[in-house]
Length: 316
Image (cartoon, rainbow, N blue to C red):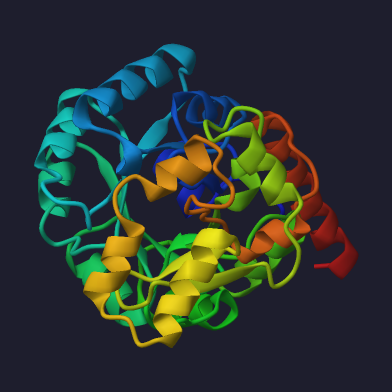
């Protein structure tokens, strides 16, 4: 393995380092995306928590703040994504990462507009479907990841090599990656890039509430759990809301009962407004290794420096 910065991922997205900042709800607005892109990685605006006009505003502010490529992450599980897609096309966003849905529906339209498309998958079966749909890359996201997760509960250590051996398009590893050493492990498994979420949630430019950032860096091993599996599996920090979910689940709650508890705006209440007990706090297992809130550019530099240092230690 050569510690060069040019591979299929850097060439595909026209970036310096094969590092992608995940598009996280209530966390990755234009300030974070532009800071990451300016640092030589790929910043993504998280459209999952944005109305169409808000997304347009973030795209325009991001473009004004960076001359480097950036993208939008668009979860397809939300109803009526057409308005978001139309704005993405009209605003000539260069890169789109889709997730939580069927890539076959929208990939062709996006690629016809000249957009580079990657899709987030939780199995090699879905990776093959993304390749068949025309996606340029796939993100193999393991069970360790924060936020919405795959029902298969496959860890990154198992998932990444399975996906890498199943498809010909480049593979980006995600889930449990917050350090250069973890990035190096992902490359050893066959990835050509990494998508990093939790580490950038604890950045100065992240749009989430300062109290949530502090909660992230105070997180220890075992402080998160995959919950709400009857709705859409999501990894949560353990708090009062999480305990309510667990109590209902232990009583054999129906999906309707869980949906009623979740309600509307629960994630905004927690991550954006800072209600650390009654809000939904989404973060990955890698939060246990995060102990500081840093500028995004420093995070990118540290990831790459530690990646190269790890290579040197292994004498590869």
